[in-house]
Amino acid sequence: MTSEDYTVTESSSVHLERGQKRHDSGFQFETHHEGSLRVPIPCAVLTVFLITTLIIALVALLVGQYNCPDQPKFSMSSDVHASSCSDDWVAHRRKCYLFSTTTNSWTLAQNSCSKHGATLAVIDSEKDMIFLKRYAGRSDHWIGLQNAAGRMWKWSNGKEYHTWLNWTESEKCAFLNNTDVNSAQCEKKLHWICSKPSR
Image (tube, rainbow, N blue to C red):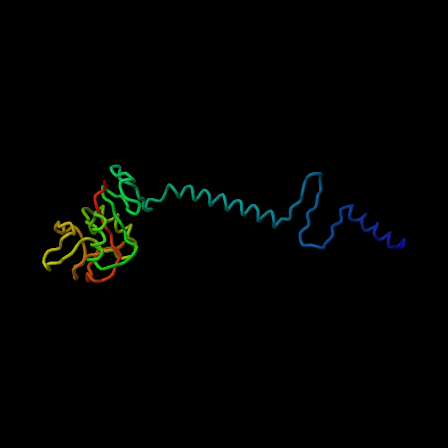
């Protein structure tokens, strides 16, 4: 190394020590006082923005949890215990309901319920109807209402049909989904709902 090279190197390091910045990269961190760090403005703005957004989102979630009146709430009746129905069954108002995962005709669905000591769902009240519609979702499910004789609609437990149900009855077997109760040909393959009294 020549003395001239040495001078250039020495002079370069002297300039860097006096606070000159090298412009090799985009962002430079520069210390002005002992222990203080100067952060580039875009990084500081981005950090403040992200922290503010997270705080607003957290507050919105916490407040929203208590202010959603239309949010469906599934709660067990005080007279029904969770252990009163088998694992796959759902307890509601002193009854146990089984929602099938497969499809079948009305008659075969009724036979499947019988194997569990149940019938296709008998709906005794509007509260039960609302619960079943909500739980059934978009899929059509057979319920225990049939017009086998062609004159009188009866539930699968033998009770006569009550007129509080609003529905079209053009076919022989009834089904429901989350929007309505309707009828279809009994041979059609649909999901089904079994019901039986809770223990």
